[in-house]
Length: 204
Image: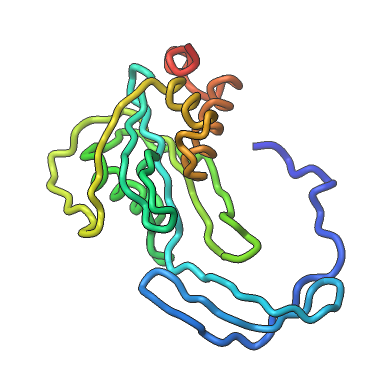
């Protein structure tokens, strides 16, 4: 972890929230409408999506340098998406426990070692959704029976890390959590933050 550079300080005034009106609510999100005051002093209508879960993403890397991916149809774009195991952890839950649950439910795998490697904000102009990403190693099949989400029909694939990264860079894996985590893992491998043997297998 590097020290925070001095140029990362905040500048100017903050946004001033207005009175919120709930426009829509489900078990996953609340959509609110308000008139906020921008840092420039201008009043601005603002629609905000508030998430009831923290996004968690897992990069499961096997000892041979391969990665397990999951594939499923995604509703918003109406297309098929290959991506890392990911999902939501309730805000009052330890996110690591949520990540372990998602890995087991979507892939049938458990990991002996977990490492938090990333925290991000997702689309921070219109949502308050945040993500924590984990690197999972020491993988083995789970002995427990894990009930998958009743709306998910998931396929599983296993491929070399470099092949997966190249596919993501070519636009075949457009899910942003997946892209960010793959780039983070590549950076860790290049910078020597992963065991040497594993890093060599990932980069070959």
